[in-house]
Each structure stands twice: as structure tokens, then as C-alpha cells.
Length: 423
Image 1 (cartoon, rainbow, N blue to C red):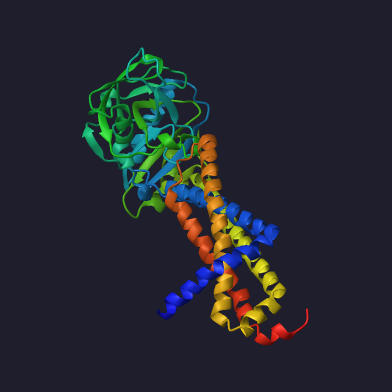
Image 2 (cartoon, rainbow, N blue to C red):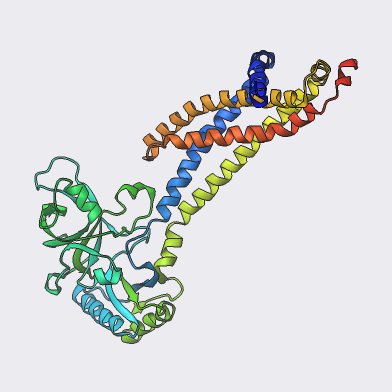
């Protein structure tokens, strides 16, 4: 019989006395098993949350983020809707005429803003009794697609004569809309959405004239994560006396310069406005950093919790193994005197640790699945993939073997003379 196979057989033969020894230390063994189980349950779910957050905050908005910035413009003493609309037209003409500006349009919201985009209920029939699909809206004009930098998959862009002017309390809905492919698939999974009719607020009919590839909504919170890319563009300017957002797309290399020049050009065009250069001018890259700050913080916190739990578990294994080595020095010495090699002693403690960790892993898998089901119910998280539990189990097995290695090596170094010493 080969050497490695002989050693494996020896380890198998050690399992029975190891289990007998563990039964004599039920409380200490049970505590370590429970600690490992809780660690696996928490670490696997925490890693899953970290993974979902990282995937979420790294998703593209579908826009030309590197060349987009926003000017949040507030009005001073302009409450008349026609006056506000005329001023918005003049502002957009000024912005589009600046050297280095590719295009611009006005909207009530912008991607990754963190809110303010309208949540629009969408029905397929005016008498639909089932829960409607929701979409996140942007007010847009014929310049919006080029400003965003989104790709039109089917249909056409808005025409200038389709762009309306709405006040903040107007409830009228446009007759045509452009939607994202994600929303189109959800609304019409069996066929093309182009040319179909939707029913929006107050059951107003609207025909789908265009479908764009991807465009993320203004919300970044977890409560709307399932509809983040279900975006609907409404052909209108929102002439609100409170203000508007101007989205500006620039030529490469012009972003920094125009983020300073564009607000000055607007103020020069009409001073009856409020624009704070430090707070009200923001690039889409900065909006991503701010919008996903919470997700990034949660991911870092969860990763730190995982690291601390694994460290605590490793410390518990080291402490328990060291205690058992000190308690068994005479027993180890007897085994050495009877012919046990250092490898036998080392294998004994590693096998013992593997059995303890395996018990914790089995219990931890059950607890991990139950924890994931609770998170799915309470926070609408998706189902955790099974391989994440296996990854956590493998990590704990490896950590357990590394943690026991020091105490096991000390045990293997116990000389046979220890068998002759009195207790």
C-alpha cells in the first residue's frame, strides 16, 4: 500500500476516537460548531448583499456619463408659466450655442439624482383591473436622446411640434412616448412594443414611437431597484416656477471648462435665477459617486463584518485547540511513546478540526438559507445562489485548517518523555 494512502487510512481510523473525545467536551465543541454555523450564515448572506450592491453601483446608466453635466437652475420671481417656458427656451438656445457643447435639454430629473423623477403607472387597457406596471419618467424634447447619448433601437425621435409645455399642476399626458427596451419587454413580452398604445395617468392614451437601448432612472434607492431601467420619456418641458435641470453634453475634453462657463452664460443671459456653482453644477460622474454612496458604504460595512466574524471564528478555533493541546500533553506523549509520528499527531488535530467545522458548515447552510428567505421576504432581495454557501463553507474549512495548524504543530512537537511525567 502506498505511503499517502496509508496516511489517509490512519486518519480515517482516527475518526472514531476523535468523536469519542469530542463527546467528552460537548459544551466547548457545541459552542465552536454554533460559532462556525452563525459565521457561515452571516458571512454568506453578507457577501451576497455586497455582491448585489457592487453589481448595482457598477451598472452603466446608458448615457454618455463622461461628457454629461447638469445645471440645477432656480428662478427668482418667475411664477408665470409662459414666462418660465420662454426663459427655458432662451436658456437652451444659449447653452447649445456655446463652443464645445454638443447638445442640451431641460428635465425635472436626471440619472442617479436620487429622486424627483416621476413614477408613472402604465396600463395596457383603460379598464385594466390588475396592478399597473410602473415606469420612471423624464420630461424630454427632440434633443434629449442626443444629449443623453442613448441608442435608438427602433422607431423615431420626438419631433419639435410634439413637445408641449406643462405647468407643475397640469395633469395632461402627451400623445406619444419613448420607452426603454427593458420596459418594452415587461409590457409586451410576446411581441414588439413599437406602435402600441399605453394608458398613463387618468387613462390618457399614448403611442410608443421609439424604443431606446438603456436609460437608468433618477432613483437609486433599493425600493425601486426592480424598475431602475424601466424609463419612459415624455415630450414636454416642465415650466415650474421652482426651477429646472439643464442637462448638457459636451465634446471630449471640454467638461471641466464648460461646467464653469455654462452657468456664467446663463446668468449673463438673465440674472433672475439661482445657480450655486459649487452645489448646483454636477457632472454625471459626480452624481454616480453621490448617488451610490450608501450602496458603497453598505458594501464596505458588510465586508468589514465578514472579516471580523472570520477573525473571531479563527481566534475561537485557535483558543480551543491550544487549550486541548495543553490538556492532552500527557496523552500525546503516550501516543508518541507507542510509536505515533509527528504526522499522526498533526493529522489527529487537523481531522478533529475538519469534523468540527463540517458540523458547523452543515448547520450554517440551513441557517444561511433561512436567513436569505427572511431577507427575500422583508427586503425584496433575490435568492442567494447555492455556490455562495459552498464558497463560504470552503473558506471556513480552509480557515479552520490554518487556524489549527499552530496548535497542531505544537502538539506534534510534544516529546515521548511527557508520558513519564506525573499529572
